[in-house]
Amino acid sequence: MTIFSKEEARNRLKHYLPLLPEREEYETKILKAAYPLLKNTTQVISYVADRSLEVDILPLIESSPLPRPTQFWEYKHSAKWYFPKINAENHLVFIRPLSWTKGKFGIWEPVGEDQITPEQADLVIVPALGFSEFGKRLGRGGGYYDRVLSDPILKEKTIGLTFSKFFPVPFSPDPHDCQVGKIITEVGVRSFLD
Image 1 (spheres, rainbow, N blue to C red):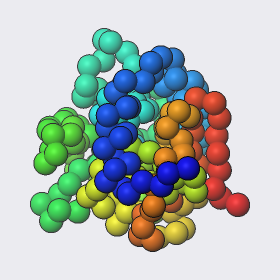
Image 2 (image 1 turned 90 degrees about the horizontal axis):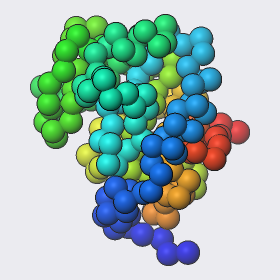
Image 3 (image 1 turned 30 degrees about the vertical axis):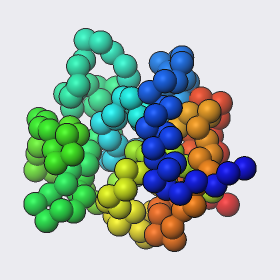
């Protein structure tokens, strides 16, 4: 198997992910597998997906356009939901949204006052282009999640979502790349907690 550099792996994924057939069917299966992990959670960190590149953790409902209101998620789940924002100091923080704005990279970011850290969350759903065979995350290259999830104790509460066709991604991870505790694809759950 060819092992790609991170940059080459990113470029390939950015090319092939938008072309994935039956994407909505796969996302529905991924969401069904992820749903039990939400049980007994009170605070969840998630993300608003780039729908062409990432699994949309939020139910795909046409009548709820992006950005969807917070009440949409909290109606479905009793947990409070928090989303990433790059703050003025260029750090990743997680805020419970009252409204939304386009952020530094053109990604929807929350506007609000209520903020938590990954340590305070019950579950952290980590965005990614893909994951290595050992659950190492391949992001966009900014290192924001690698820094905020650097404590190995956080691994047990992190999950990544991806499509089985693109898992694992054969790339060479760096030592600082964060590793998730579980990966969910449309065909099942793989744990890295043992």
